[in-house]
Image 1 (cartoon, chains in turn yellow, green, brown):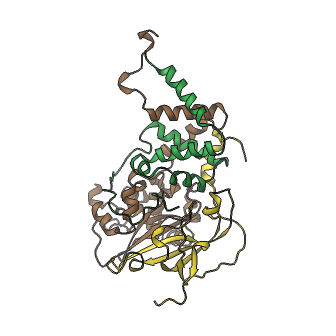
Image 2 (image 1 turned 45 degrees about the vertical axis):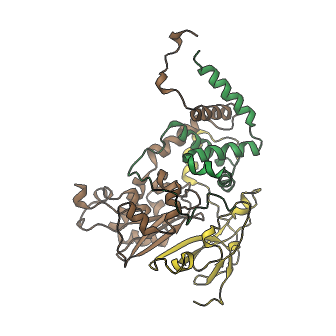
Image 3 (image 1 turned 45 degrees about the horizontal axis):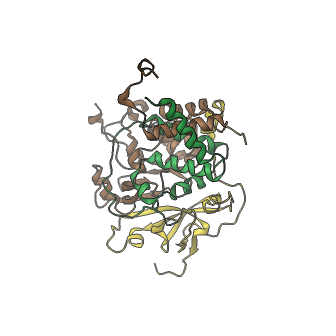
Length: 122
Length: 105
Length: 207
């Protein structure tokens, strides 16, 4: 890596960006359409597992592929590559029976944040 | 961390101060802070995840009351000190020097 | 120092913050950690070159060209790159479609993630606590506060940008725009309509 970003590098750097995708073939743990439960993790360090979904059940809508894990990248630059899923949660699941049933919430969640929820009642 | 930044679902944080249009940077210093972070991030001195975490660790009352790019300044300084790239004392000295040359007697 | 050496305007003394940032930049430049000209180029790029006009071009193209629209939903990153927009904070883009049945809203509850290549840098209100906290619990209330009444029978979908995918809304094409050119259509496409915090301008209002 260069030591300093110089002006001639800027346009190219902005146009390329830096993706956190990892080009490695890993078997996904979850399938599209599967019910999953966000884990009840309470990490002291960095995470992208928002509190409002912890312990809640949703449905996997998309597998975005393999990315580095923020929780370990933020503490020592450790990649821990894994699949990232888009999970769809109903408003009742997140906000209780009084919530508007015509609202829904889609959240990007790393595989380490999720457990299967196959045995749950619909 | 269960920090102040994890705001989804909280009540009472006030009205959305919506503007239909606004300058990208409201003051010159905001643009400089933005660019400095992109620069050190771009060459790998700091990664995006640790940068986000540096802002999450800000004092919660400060986090909610200061302007957005003050979060960035806080995060940038925190990481530069923690990684030993510069020392807080170095910045203090430079600031004193700049104030000294700007001072009106 | 004599008074003649003080020509600066005493009504515009630099704030503590401005001095601190100036000191930090000065230090980092001296230590060759950043280059001032590179910082200038970065600021220029986001002030003048990268902004919501990019996203408006994508939307207008999708409205007039059904095959482009299909490509946009099959692989948003690639389709958007066809128009020359790509890169930082948009390495993985996903466009979501507003329809008569569905209104989409984008947020980053944890910080300020936003599709820079198509929309530029996010506005202050998107990055601040009120929007970030409320959109995921009361999206219709937020829309109402922003002046948009969504019918009760319409579905509202909220997309929280927790991962590295950056979302953008394809707003509904307003009626009365048949035969309009892409350039004309772009004038109706507001930044807020691509966040889902508003809708496009109507042809009558745009006149």
